[in-house]
Length: 290
Image 1 (cartoon, one colour):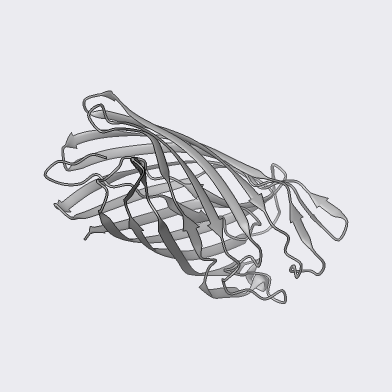
Image 2 (image 1 turned 60 degrees about the horizontal axis):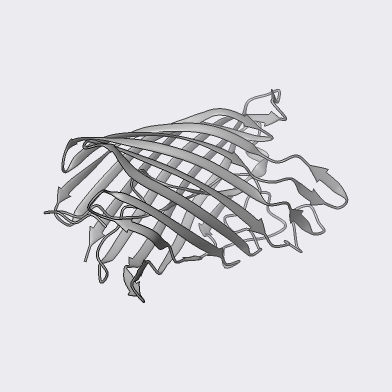
């Protein structure tokens, strides 16, 4: 992991795809940069999303269909050396609120805690001298969030999920870093699904890449792209095509002090099938080194 006068710390942003049955593990640029064993980080993620259109397949549904979301994640991580291999045990606690607007106001709203996530990234390559890293991360989603099958919108999903992610990060030049990652999500069954019956879902996946340009050792500008396929769903004998999403984001990262970092990004969907399209998304991440 990088260690200079300040710390380039690793973290992974978990983003809920509102009003869909999918959930993706999005990375911020530099998430797989490492810190020394024994380092503890506290993180807070805040996200505001505005979804102003709904798609059936690749066709925009008629009407003025909207969804507004506000989500957050509280996260605690601790870098640990196990047999000479760097690992990062952690817990993530999501929370949030979402509400249907305009023609989809009949969806109502939902608030509360999301499904708790346990994760432990492990680095197979941790070359701090050359800023090159390769890691694997399993994420286990526990069905602990607020959920009711009588509500159209829910913060929890009432099922277990397992996401397996691999990521690589390196420097293309002294001031340019590049990250690439892929993951697959396996879904448990929701036996009390909204609409009745049991919801099953085929595995979904995400591919993503990002880059950073360092203006100074403590400040960067960043951008990224991602494609998500949530996996086909089946409920009451009816199979529905997967929600798919391609998106981009741009932003900046700044170390306000040796132990405090702020990351701000703005993004939106490029194309969506079978779900709401995110027209504006603002993300803020605060990191504190203890």
